[in-house]
Image 1 (spheres, rainbow, N blue to C red):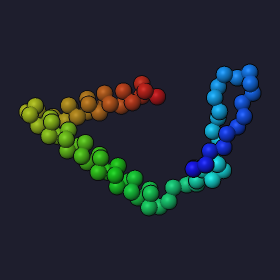
Image 2 (cartoon, rainbow, N blue to C red):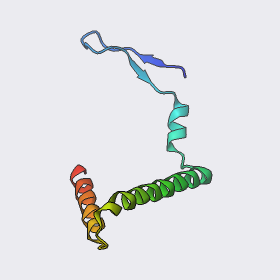
Image 3 (cartoon, rainbow, N blue to C red):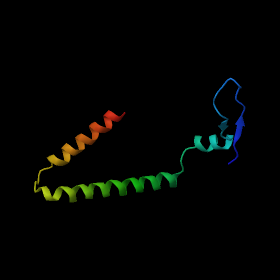
Image 4 (cartoon, rainbow, N blue to C red):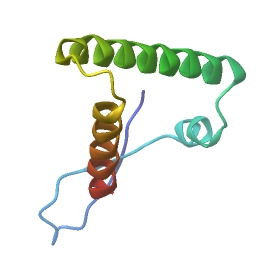
Length: 85
């Protein structure tokens, strides 16, 4: 990818600034294709199934048949996600 260097005034201490070509902006402004959305969805589903099965396996030794550990873990994860926003 070719880089275009923009001259910086002499009063600035910053180095040269690279400006992306116009083609990059056009690619980033396009919507993802149907295949990309499908691949993302499949990978997301596989990740959720893997995480869920790992969670069930890890909590199997607890000996509790209640759904409470799952609900509390989900609540903790949602709270952590909320705080990171």
